[in-house]
Length: 299
Image (cartoon, rainbow, N blue to C red; front, top):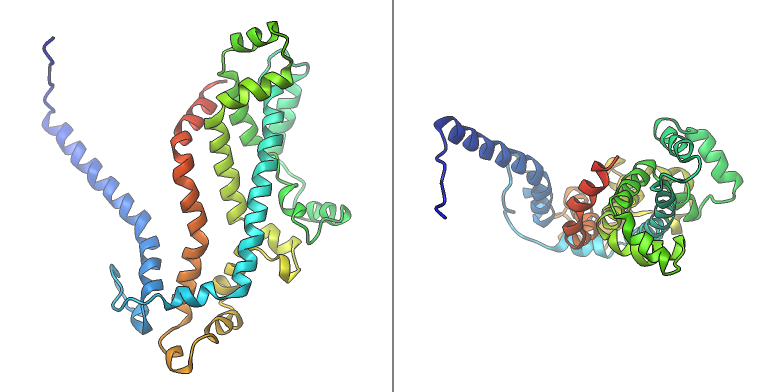
C-alpha cells in the first residue's frame, strides 16, 4: 500500500514554528526560577547577589547544603511532614475510594441526594473558626490527626474516582457475583487492581497537597517537636527569621561565615524541601494522564 505524505502549507509551517517558540518560552519561564535557586544555592560569597540571568555559579560550593542538612529543626520538620503525607494519603485513598465506589452504582438508593451533598461541600464549608473550634473540642490540637482527618475526603477526588469506577465494565462484577463474590470482595479483588491509574493520580494530588500545606499546621500545631517542614520554611523564607539563619550559620567557622548569606541558605532549603516530590513523581507519571482522562470523561 502506497503511503501518501501530505506536504504542509506555508501557513501550517509558520504555525508550527510559532508553536515551538511559544512552548520554549513556557518551558523557560517554568524552569528558570527553579534553576536560579539551584545556581544560588551552589554559589559562594556575594556572587549570589549578581543581577541578570544566572546560568551557572561563579564559584561552586556545596557548603550551603552542608549547613542546611545539619540544622536539626529541618530534620524535625522533614520527619513530621513525611508522617503527615504518608498517613494522610493512605487515609484519604481508603475513605475516598470507599465513598466513590457506591456512588458509581446507579441503583444505589438516594444516589443523587448523596452526590448532591458531596457536591455541596465543593461550594460551601464551615469556615476557619468553626473548623478550629471543632478540632479543639475533639482534642486533636498538636496531633497529626488535626492535619489529616479534616480534609481526608475531597469532593473533587470522589467524583474523579467515581467516574473511573463507572468506566469498568459491569460484566466483570456480574461474573464475580455469579461465583458468589459480594460487593466488598469485588471492590478489593477486581475494582482496585483495575483502578491503579486513578488511585495513583489521586494519591499524587493528595500527597502534594499534604506536603505543601502549611496554614493548618500553623494554626493547629504549636509544639516545636511537631512542627512541619513548611512552617520551618515559612519562618526562614517568608518571615526572614534571622534567628533561624544565624542558628544554621553558627556551625561555620568565623573565617568562612563572611562567604555565606541567608540567600544561599534559603535557596538550599527550598530545594531540599522540593526533592521528595521530584523523586516520587516519575514513579506515578505513567498513570497520571490515563487516570485523569478516564476519571473525567464518564458522566
